[in-house]
Image (cartoon, rainbow, N blue to C red; front, side, top):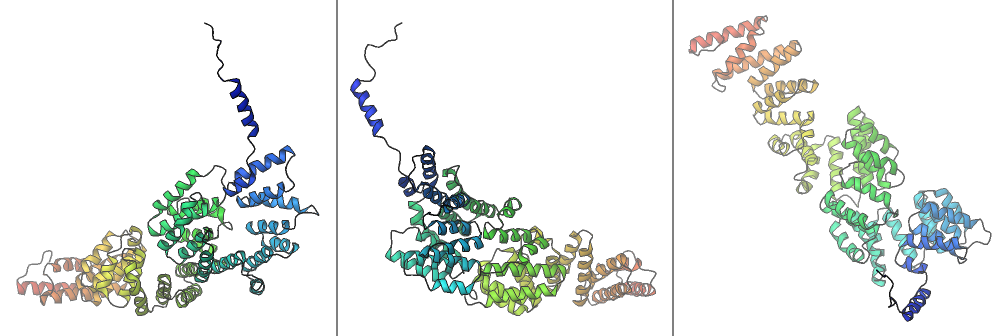
Length: 558
């Protein structure tokens, strides 16, 4: 079979046109990549130009620029350091190198390097932020006075307000910028971040929407959207938001990678915390705080306290976490010094002008008064926010304790029974307070059943002692007698016999008065027989026996 063709597949004219078209095709421009925020693509092209030896004079500057904006600050630092070795280097190199040091957390190097550059707006803004990072208020105010009314300086000022938790001041600046520059969509992200910090998550979502619609591949914007979803709904929904982004992201994408890893652990309720958070200490600011929270939730009190001990709190959440760590440490180790520190931190938050009328502020004041054992004051603050925490076990646990401590046992019992956490319900504090409520509400049988469900331990002994004493005080002698009887068997203390003796006589009197079923005497007789070596036990048994005969009330075992 002849496979040759008599008719050409492509005409000669078409072939010539194809060659011409290929000649017309040019390499893409670096500017196109930057416009699309494709820094990996820009770097690839710039490195190709460098390898050909035909790169423009400013090629290395653009490589450093692309590396910095792509989040590879180490690579950008290396490029700028190489450029700085040339005595005739571009004037911006020193400030740009200082920016790399700043992003890498090398603040001393950043300050020295920035001061080597020529005075400029960028230099002043960088030194302004370095003064904030180093806590130098004098330097901060000095550079503040040099800020101009240009967009870059105003954005820098708003960022400092944000970092110092002055969110409303930052919002005012961002709104003014947007009013005059509606095309600057990215400012909406900063504005949304302020609303998120103020707990206006729905408002934050609305403000963020316009930017996300135009830039669905923005790591910062999608991360903020996921955080809002987490606060408004749950971790699973938030994780879904992040997954949409990570699925579309390039495998070489590194910008904000650490932040996304950190937040995924939060969305997954701490899953992988011990593998992720320690690696991010000093990288993501919240990593230390969230690792401490993880340890607190898992009762690793010493580890949590070690992480928080040297932290200088700068925001309400940090003050609250420091207070919690000190409170738990103080209660666990019996340290009044830690308890006092916790009270002070709680009070600082609860009385601050910005937090006093917020939910965390009122919780802080309630916690402060709780540690001071001023439970009437605790109830004032908790009652004002209880509608926000109806199904919150921790809130209900504290609220019920405060109710019980002020003698409102009926409401305390109802609130204790709303708690669903198995861990909390197994805690001795919960069991002892609930038992006390049952007894005070004349339900001693329920308190006794709580004891029967407990395994033998130090807690079970203490609960038995509470039941014995409180039932005796409330005239519930039947269960007091049973409790004192068990206590005496566990520890032959003369005080337990005295309590048992009084409780047995009390039951006998109540039966005679018709306030206790006669069947109760059967157990009382058995209890007294087991203590027959006591002369008084024999005397009480004799009295019961005599009454039984005279009243013609048969008592089994007598």
